[in-house]
Image (cartoon, rainbow, N blue to C red; front, side, top):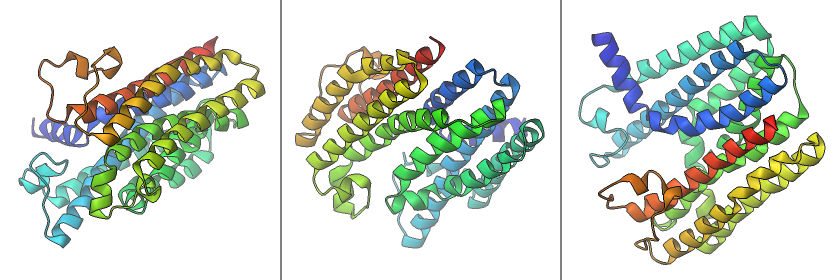
Length: 316
């Protein structure tokens, strides 16, 4: 039971609630590869490896954050993501071993895919691993957004498509950019709402680089616009105009824009909670920071809908 308890403990602390958006992003290229007669087993093995690398990335983020806390003699609140270390439920060595274990199992998945699909698997593994391990450091230098677009975009999509079909496609790269930019909007919306706090703390993010909250909000519009332009290019290249179904998310994006603009002016403003703010609409008692989660969940649900509509567009 001790082994099982340890597994449950580390899965819980690796923040598995972040996996769904990775799963949805993966689903797009998985469906695309299946349409092109891809190997289902190879795709599922790749998914296990990708998920483990994602969870290991979350833990490595804790690892570097905690080392920084110790160095600066600072400690976060009880609710912080590394509280299990502060409270003595695990040591920094335990955390390091958990990261190594997850990456080793992911490496095992990569080894299987190497024999199934070919040696290009090694390239994708070595290209992704440094970003996963040092995402925290990249993020602190304002490079986290580029890392997200690369890992959720070309690296994941080209990698999965390759292991499933043993081939490459320029169309896949275009598709990957459209979807990874949409994933990036979740992180960006989060940073946008942290704009004032990050400015006061001297933290470097893409939003703070833009100097004002309105400029940062305009940056979000630019991200969405870029993704839709890429979708239009994809339609022309592939001849599949069903991808335009993703434009059905535009009304929700407008809602998000208006809501974030109100948040910039007053972070206590609370618009009406509706179904697209799920799961906030299911909670009987709202959290103290409900205005934040109202916008954050909306950004997640926009991305979710975008991915699902993309999958529908692929199979039509």
